[in-house]
Image (cartoon, rainbow, N blue to C red; front, top):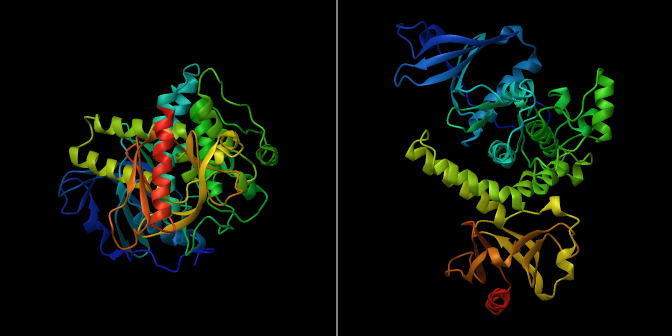
Length: 444
């Protein structure tokens, strides 16, 4: 059992003759070899063609006899984590086979290289920077992928440009789950203890040999965002000790304000806060105004993308909407704007404790309605907040009577998402509806 890991075993690989699974073109096997994509100490990665539908995939052929017991555990964890992920921005697991001491893992093929190669190419071309919409298109997909990973009680633990795979359709895929780990409990707490990953992308708490949470992945994703914005790394040194000291200091050159918006630069700064407790979660990041706009743009781009099938478009958009809807109605706190006190200067129309969520799960929150927004915090004195500007609220109405939906008002937003608020009784629900409608009318 890897440290702190889930007791749920990985899917049992099918024991077969691997020569019957993968072979030369024309052979009687499931997958035909096309070419070697890469080789390492423990095996090879092959580009293969599935015989039944001619689909190109990647097959990792591993020799377990060359691995330590620890490395074999990493392989088991990789299969478990990949098989647990079902998201358009994560490399899709297909199946795996075992023929002791060999193992074959088949997964989705990303046909356009990786992000690290693209960043290096642009730097070599005289630092040909990405436009903000290009940065946002890649970053928002990665953030949604990581949010999916964390929701499934996993840490990736090796997020870097080389593990961000690119598709000719323009979509990106978070890949290489070789250091990933799934846990029994939420990864919001300090569940990780193993020092692993790629040095340039490691969070300060790992260098300090402290236990770590999902916030370590957030730091690594922040490094990738920095590379997208600057085509270079924020922390460098000629020695490992120097790199460690640079990362622990947290001091780096900020991206150009003339090149990128304040909103995107603020997200970056928040993700690279040294103290993990002050670092935002993926939910916090995705619920910032700049990211919500990027999500809307992603949906539009997917719908207009001729390289994506109609079925995939519908599936991808459904995933995005469900993921963002959960953010709106559950644990979202805008940590990036934690120090924003503007709402306190506004006239308070109504405030009080409520429940926010869905009929499946409700979480306690404190809501303040002022002249400009509906402000949601975990508790009354919490300085971190999620703001729903009144001009983004399309309507507010009582929920249809149903088990678990008693005393509920539904706030519909112009993004297509809804926020469900559960009051103490019908009278309190109706008061919230009346006051929100009055506040909106006063804004016109």
